[in-house]
Length: 267
Ligand SMILES: NC(=O)c1ccc[n+]([C@@H]2O[C@H](COP(=O)([O-])OP(=O)(O)OC[C@H]3O[C@@H](n4cnc5c(N)ncnc54)[C@H](O)[C@@H]3O)[C@@H](O)[C@H]2O)c1
Image 1 (tube, rainbow, N blue to C red):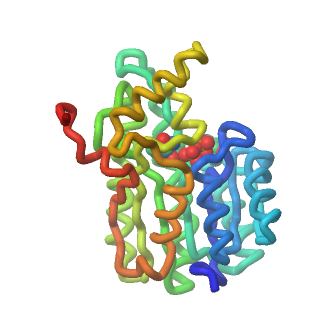
Image 2: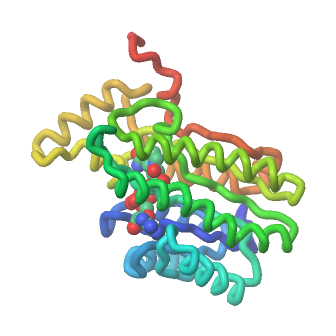
């Protein structure tokens, strides 16, 4: 018996920006499938979604793929129509897409601001808007939004990212309250330092020989001296999607080994 037997999980951003890389979206998709869910893997390109689907199918599970831009309402409507036509329901909506742009406020222009807000925030709005009527009609569901530790802690010059993820937190709590009466739970995961291709990309400043040094320095500052991996995020998402979390709603769950508790002056 899987924890998600008979459920349909729709994952936006199910691929990885680095082909072959293990992203949060890929690990969550595989984890949902291992627990019995039929997974719909959606990404900007079909190739990215198919890579995740191959991992799932190799383990003998079912996975449908779609290409869609989360910032495009028509793309999302097409995906949701396809899922409903095939499976008749959507039990889990997993909003994983999030762009990270490392730029100071001074260097951030209006186009960058609009792009990050459209993908990171409007994307979750559009996906929820399209999926929620189906969850209401079927009598329940779960939405899990991938936020970030950066939504509540300054981690460097990422003003668009920090602002967009703080908006994801507010959006999550708002949906949680509005839809609790429909047996729909909405929570956010705040990943800390997670060694996915995106997470590691911030240490790559052009000189490959310094990446290892930067990562080692970062690790030395983390509680327990270690980063997380994509499975840590996927396991938290599995818990939130499962019946074991049936009374957990509107939560902003850090998955960070406690790094949020650190003071900059901690010994
Ligand atoms: N890795 C970390 O350390 C870390 C820390 C905090 C938060 N996060 C969050 O985790 C999430 C992503 O992590 P990941 O490892 O899966 O990253 P990833 O970027 O490798 O995977 C996300 C997928 O989203 C896809 N995508 C990008 N723009 C899209 C769009 N407009 N429409 C549809 N798909 C699109 C990409 O092609 C990619 O395959 C983000 O929300 C990020 O903010 C990661």
